[in-house]
Image 1: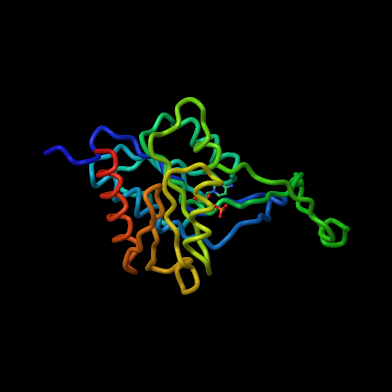
Image 2 (image 1 turned 45 degrees about the vertical axis):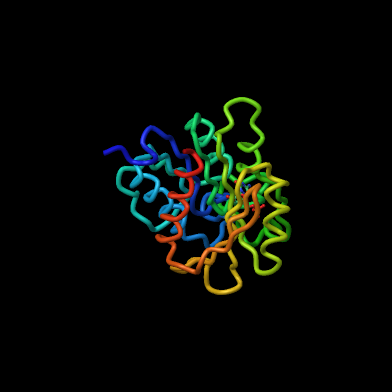
Length: 216
Ligand code: C5P
């Protein structure tokens, strides 16, 4: 039987990135990767060829998904660009917005002035870069937004700012970060719809089904 996403290539980023300070230290965040991994599995279950570009997580590679492991935001962008073309791009990763300007090639010593300031530079915005591709932009580009307040207004603004087609907005005022459940607002050109709070696996299935409908 042909599944609804058979013949489609879905490219997904997930997890945190790690930005080196020196060989033993880095800047990162608490992203577990669970939502992105669940979306990868859900799209594969609907027949898609799935490429998952993942930062460091504690999760096993999802079955039937080509998983590419990276550490930094710049490596994540490069892996995404290499994996194109895709029918759908879903940016779920919690990319570190900043990285140390000049990572040291030797372990920094605390007796030095090294830690009194840490110059940072901005990382590439992967979602925005892919959304704004002139050639080879995936037909459907989906971003995520984690907000603690004004979820809808901020998601609508983010959709415009990034140039993506959909924003999946999470209300992270509860225990969503790293937790098992998610409360989602889907913002598209047509408007916003609130999904019932559910397990991340269920949210992933709903999103995969919704993508299949959109692609027709
Ligand atoms: O701007 P903000 O980080 O809130 O946007 C979140 C969305 O943008 C997520 O979809 C995230 O994966 C994506 N993003 C990205 N590259 C960045 C920052 C965020 O792809 N450097």
